[in-house]
Image 1 (cartoon, rainbow, N blue to C red):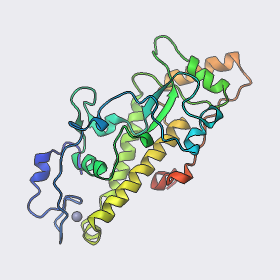
Image 2 (spheres, rainbow, N blue to C red; image 1 turned 45 degrees about the vertical axis):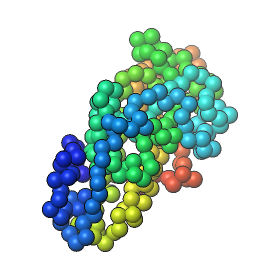
Image 3 (cartoon, rainbow, N blue to C red; image 1 turned 90 degrees about the vertical axis):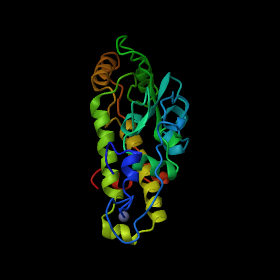
Length: 251
Ligand SMILES: [Zn+2]
C-alpha cells in the first residue's frame, strides 16, 4: 500500500494481484475498494471539542479525573487528520486509499472518540496565551498547550507510526495466502486502536509536542512565578483499552 494510489490504480490490479499484499499468490484477496475521505464527513475536518473516549484511565489526566476540564481546551486528533487525508481543509482525499478503505471497514474514523484528546487552549500564538496551560498545572494535572499550526515533528511522528502500522499489517505473499481476509481485518482493527492509544499516551505525556517553542516558553514563565510547583506530564498505560501493542517504546 502506497501513497498516491487511486481507485483506478487498485482496479488495475486485475491480473491476479492480491489487494492486501499486492502480490500474485493462490486465492488472492479481492475487494471493491472505494474512496473514503471525499464523501465521509467522519473523515473531514471539524471541531473536536467535547470528544473523548470517557474511560477512567483517559479521564485520569484531568482534574478530579473528569472530562471536560475546567479550563478552556481544544479537541485534538491523536493520529493527525493530515496524516490520513490530504487537503483535509478544502477537498479531502485519501493519502493511502486501500489503508483508509480497510480502516473504515473495521470501524475506524479519524473523528472518533478514541482518536481524540482535549488539551489546554492556546487560542493564538501571537497573544502568548498560556493561561489555560498554567491552569492545568495549578490543578496538579499539567497537559501541553494546543493552538493553531502544529510543529512538523509532531506530524512526522504520526506519519512514522502509520508507516510502522503498514509494515506490521501488510504481509508477505506466503503469510497472506495462509490468512483469511476477516482475520487480517481483525488484526488491523486491533492495531489501529493500539496506534491511537500510543498517540494518546505520547500527547498526554508530551513526548509528542504540538508546539515545542511555545510549550518551553510557557513552562519557563510559569516557573518564574511558581518555582516550587511541579510540571510533570502524565505517564499513562491504558491497559484496559488494549494497550499500545507493538507501538510501545522498546518493542
Ligand atoms: Zn495477498
